[in-house]
Image (cartoon, rainbow, N blue to C red; front, side):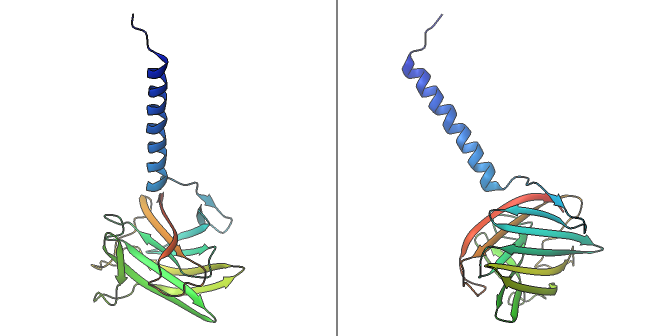
Length: 188
């Protein structure tokens, strides 16, 4: 029978702790499956690091409301292929009485551009927004699958990847860098 010295036991414990930490950290970065709440109005919601994402499937569209603790922009993206690439995005902010909402497409692993600038057609409808008590809230509707080349289809009843971000207070543009970001997988 071999004996294990205290040094080897300590090294094994450190190794196991590092592996566990890496697994937990990679799961947290990848998003994982969040807790989904369902309100009396039928809206489903998820909260993640200050962001609230609410949705309802209505026929061939998804109705979304997102809000975050910022006076800047808020954004959500659906079903990226690789990091940000291939995702359908809606980004919006409120400036005074005006609501600014743009439909973007992930054109590279770390960037997105306006669908209109890429030669497509914005699919966002019924856009509204408000800013109150240090939070920005944007609501909109999107088709589930318009068959557009600049669109990642949203598949109800299946797991979809949702990526989100929001800007710093006062970041009222479509190009300001995010203050927070994350992702989760959820059945829409």
